[in-house]
Length: 191
Length: 104
Image (cartoon, rainbow over all chains, first blue to last red; front, top):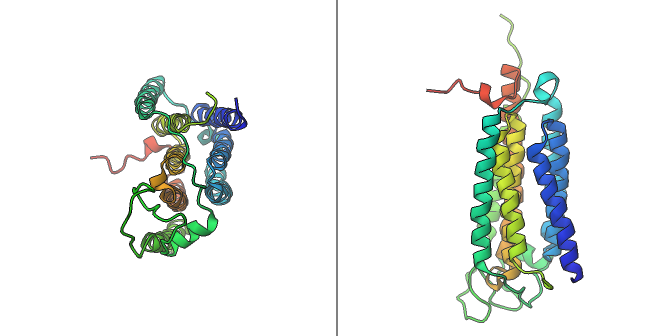
C-alpha cells in the first residue's frame, strides 16, 4: 500500500459517505452540510489526480460560491414543515432501484475499461491551462491536443479554447443578469 | 493493489452519479433536487479529470472541460435558485409535487 492508495481510500470513502448522507438525510440544512463535505472530497480527489488548478477552482467556485448560494436558498425557503418533506416509500424504492441499476451499469463499464497506468508526462500546470483558454496551443511536450496520442504527429489548430471560453463567460453574465431579474422583489402597484 | 489506476476513480464517479440520480428522483424539496444535480455534475467532473490524468491524448482537455463545467454549474445554481425563490414567493412552498400548474 503506497501513500496515494491510502489517501485515495480515505478521501473516496469520506466522499461516498457524504454523498449517501445527501441522499439519505431528510433535513435540507443537513443535506447542505453533507454536500459541503462531498464537494471538499471531490476537490481532494482532484489534488490526488495532480490537477491542482481544477481542485483550487472547485474549492473557490463550488464550495465558496455555489454552495453559499444553495445555503442562501435553504435559509430563505426552509421554515416550518418545508424543512422536512417526507418522501413516500414507493418513491424511495423506485429512486433507490434506479440509482443502484445505474451504479451497476457504470461500474461494469468502468471495470471493462481496465486499469491504465498514469502517463509519465507531468500534468499541465496553471500557466498552460491559462494559455489554452487564451487560444495558444503550443504545448510542451508538443502534440497533446484533444484525442491525439502524444507520439503521433498532429495538425495544430490556431484557436484552442478561446471561443468556448468567451461563450462561457458571456453565458455566465447573461445567466446572472437573468437570475437577478427573476429573483428581484416585486413592487406591488396599488389599485 | 499497489498503484492507483483509473478504475477506482471511475467507480467513485459512478457512485457519486448514482447518488445524484437517486437524490433527484427521491427528494421533494426543490433545493434537494438542485443538490442532486450538483452531485451529478461533480461525478462527471471526476471522470473528466481522471481521464485527463490517465489518457495522454486528453492531458489538457479534461481539466479545461472540468473548469467549464464548474462555471456552468455555478450559473445553473443561480438560475435554479432564482426560479425556486420566485416559486416560493408565489406559492409559499418548495415542494416540487405542487408545481403542477402546467400539467396537461
